[in-house]
Amino acid sequence: MLLPNSASLARRHSIPNTPDGIAAAPKGDQDLPVWDLADLYPSTDGPELKKDLEAMDAAAKAFHEQYKGRIDKLTGAELAEAIREYERIDEVLSRIMSFAHLTYAGDMSDPEIGRFFSSMQDRITKISTPLLFFTLEINKISDDSMGKKLADADLKAYESWLRDVRVFRPHQLDDELERLLHERHVVGRSAWNRLFDETVAGLRFPFRGEELTSSEILNLMSDTDGAKRKDAAKSVGKVFGDNIKTFTLITNVLAKDKQIDDSWRNYPTPVSARNLGNYVEDEVVEALNDAVTASYPRLSHRYYAMKAKWLGGDKLNYWDRNAPL
Image (cartoon, rainbow, N blue to C red; front, side, top):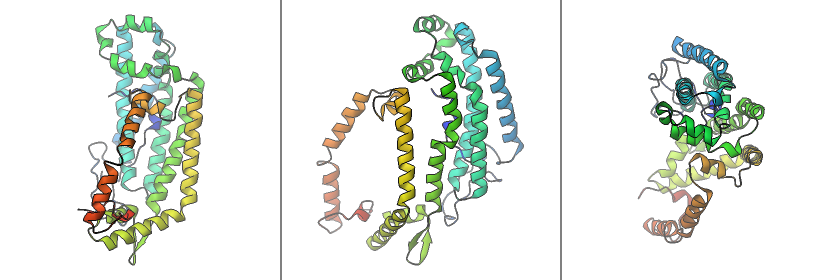
């Protein structure tokens, strides 16, 4: 399945897998379920993954050689053929990235998995860079010319995808700048996101003589024992507070990165890019936000007040928000 910005494959998170095809549970979480990823690839170092990487590298280079600078000149049928090949490459690269992401999510604290994840990000960025021109050139086709091409029955099948790609036309940058941003993503926003994920994965939370992982301590926030919920919440607050400088730095860097990107692309608000990707107008989202906010007193406030009474208090303690009823 094609995504509107599928040329930017490096922006998709990915994660590696253990040799037996099972995403390992992080240390301390051995009782939790694990993913069987063998349907994607049997292992992180098997011939199947290596074969697909090499094949897609060759296919991307051949695609670039065949179509770069020619998209506007293609007939509707020829453009449909190009999209089909682009889709084929995209699906394989997306499969690799999904495999890498899920494996990495299975145990972010494992250094071998981290190296595999980083390696896959680098490889996919390199492989997908020659494909970047495709959607950029599609967006340079005039509406009149695209309308004529869409008279072809084969291309008509991709009309909705083309529409979703071309909605970003007003925010598209010069080709070389788009390529720069594409190649730098793995050491930019993606790297900061990974730092956050690995920092949280590496934290340990003291709880009644034990050192728990984030998933274990957060699970206790829904425990039936109120004293356990309180102790767990206090531990979470203490450990996160001890790491506030790191989290603040990550948040500020990501916010500034977003602000710079939005500025260059002329997005009017911080949520405009996301709204455009979701095919919804800013005004619609703003109206929804206003309606939900206005309903707080009669929905969430009322619910939490009722929950406090059910738990035998006048006010709801923050560690009781997820208490089972």
